[in-house]
Length: 167
Image 1 (tube, rainbow, N blue to C red):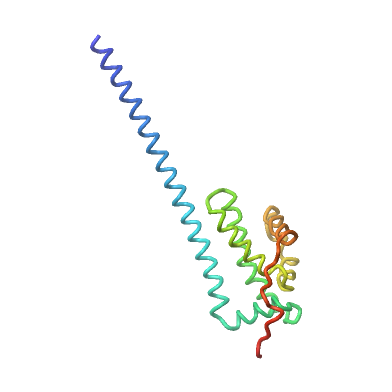
Image 2: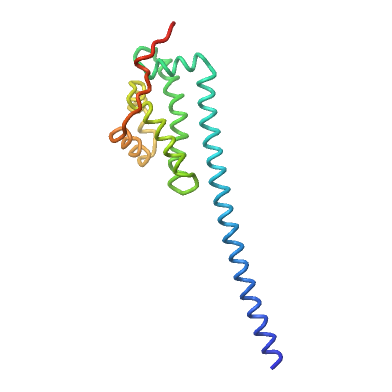
């Protein structure tokens, strides 16, 4: 009789220990998911900030980006290539973010922010030139997402056409 009671107490204790372990694992999993989302957001923001700093802190790059967006055909082939590569760099970041949001490891608000960036340039000749040249370099699902923005979005007038630069 004593051995049965000890076995029953051990079984109950083991069950409680398993339940406590599962609760702990659930909490750790939730914290790990939060840490992953935070790390992905930080990496995305760092990538975007790096791109913007590279363009914004270099007057030649800024002017090239500006001129490309306003009228890509007015640039030399080498300048167009440089501008396309610069824009392609940020679109690789956008595509990566798109898939991180889809898998749930990046907050959807980040995708909304990136969509706003795209909406800010879709009405520019340089963006049309870029997208016509490079869309095939992206995964089909991301292409559809950007095409949907192009068709259904309301572009923010970024003013490239109205602003003139002193050369």
